[in-house]
Image 1 (cartoon, rainbow, N blue to C red):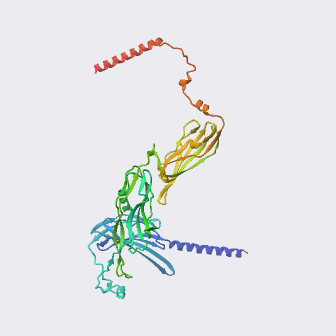
Image 2: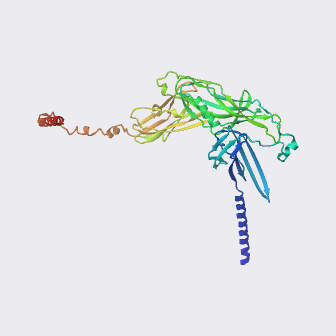
Length: 488
């Protein structure tokens, strides 16, 4: 009986041991990421390289390779390998950035960190010495021969590269050509590439270029709502009936603060454009990295003044509607309640001011709590702005809150001034609190003494000695001052 119970327990221990061994083996083959730097001493005709290597995993994403002062980037290359040794499988993926020196000398690559597969990988940096050109290969050395050249022919002949005409352009566009003061328009800076484009291209340092572009195109007389584009991703659009991929570089909504015409000058944007080999080969170099600068066309947006209105400088502009909430429409005098006046729609949400509130003693209305929510999507800015009021009714009766809460704006859809007005009716029951409100106010101790003080006229002659004493004190002080001055 005892032996039969031990056999299953031994089997479980064996299975657990095997599982632990498997886990340890898998951990030993876990993903490893590193950065390899090229040689520290090169010829001016030789590239310096930075290589990202991922062992036993996939290279899913990586950040921007660092800039090296005195060098320029010239193309990347990638490779992958899989090895099976004694039944064990290992894999490796890598991508290499090539750098070429502009002049000979000694240069420094400072320590840097790159994000690879969402991990921060650090490199200690290196000092690079660039010397005279190096003869990289002797075509007459039989021991330096390439067996593939013997098989495929002479690869020493210089490759000829062709500059293929691209079907692409850079554009700065706005969704409106004319707006009123305070009315928003959306500006988009984007690069367009046709789907049938044959010229291979790639973005070149867009963040740095965009910083220089914004210095030229940002209008000083506008409020900006930036869409904050983080990733330049393609989206399918149609231009003149032809399919294109649009890559948004910058997008923002602008709200003019005055009636000055807004002008956007032409701006440049550099792209990497590859030249293609005339006679591509399997082992040779089939494209050559080059650059091309694209320019936008000048653009102007005309700004018009709003139609005459007593307070047009303080009126919001947009397409809005009203949403309101109240705790209850049946109230009692002296009973507090909350009322929310929410403006929602499309426009400059941040510039929306408080609604106008009625005067009088029917309601005590306290300053509101304000909450706003702004959405930037679909090439437009929309959102909500809520004003939450704390109120106390003082008089019984039926009241229309539309007489107490109104908000005037210029409706861009109707091209005229419009008013959002509360549509809630409240019924207030109970006794009037107006007199209680007056009695609750403290008029001060001065008025409290009126009832107990005498209203008879009193003479001030009885206090004549006080006047004499004060005059005597002033004369003494004046004499002391004169004595001190002359003594000094």
